[in-house]
Length: 448
Image (cartoon, rainbow, N blue to C red; front, side, top):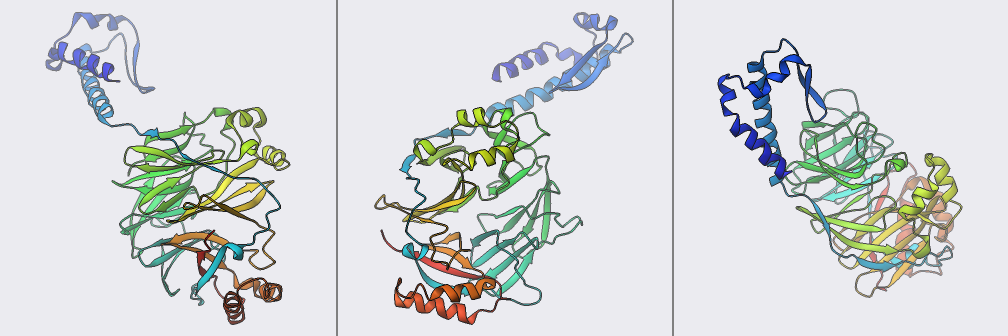
């Protein structure tokens, strides 16, 4: 790239008289042929038999100057580098895990989210904590709710609609590190809408990508996960875009043959202690990004159950549904769904045999692993999700719509768990109404 810039500079300096409209014999051959000039595959102009050489030479020089400036600026911009060896965590795949959720987590506090006629949550797709507030994404009502730490409703961010300050879809969202702005990803509208912390519209970023997930970076940049993008000429799992929606970095390329292998999850990013981490499908590594560096942080060893790039290329035939159906009959680990990290623990779950098969807790201190299977929950937290982390707590939820099922199965738990845990669960279940909004739970991990 730098060599090109130097050559352009030499051309410009050696032909500086062209700026004064002086004809140069070397270019006279363009008088007798039709010659088109292209810049980044876009035709700029064509010189024909009756072309005015002076006019066109001035245009050429101006273009060369612009290209030189652009090239120099590109050369001076440091490229993101992927570095480091990850910590390897071996995970034994076992469908007969006997742990249940309450063997691993101890409920410490229940936070009922306020319910009224204007605040009805159909389902929580994502929860993030910033400052003293819970930000809750409801995919079904296409609403981003804000609640305080005791569950009182504060406000809604943005509005679903077709207006210039509204979004057509609530695909994902993120919060700036300084808690000053909220970014809402609207895939149908091909835009990212920016609001302040009070919900006031600020700006929108139009783009030409099909984005699954977004996270805010410093200096008005955004890192996004993308799959199945027919509007671009390169295939990558991630891009960094600027405030204008332009792609300024492309990361983790993949073969064109796999472009139709599209998973629309939006849980690819996690933030912990001001560190941004991410993962993406069919990759067993968790990465962290800081400034101009991407570091391999953790890698999960599933042994022979790992899906390698070679396996994908040999088994994916162009149909995502056919591939999923095929792989669901094996023990291959399809992809991670959620990553959550605290000072002492790492939690993640993954898909196996077409469903979320295992929930995994890893102790950073001891290196021990505990897992529980979705079906081994004694009938209680069958619709339980771990959504976020707050200091050394994990944040989960229960849905009051399942009140009758909870109360029925609580009887089977009485002799299995600590009396205080049982009493607190029974109390919250009897108090809630089936029409109430979900109840958040602060959990502590039981040391192991």
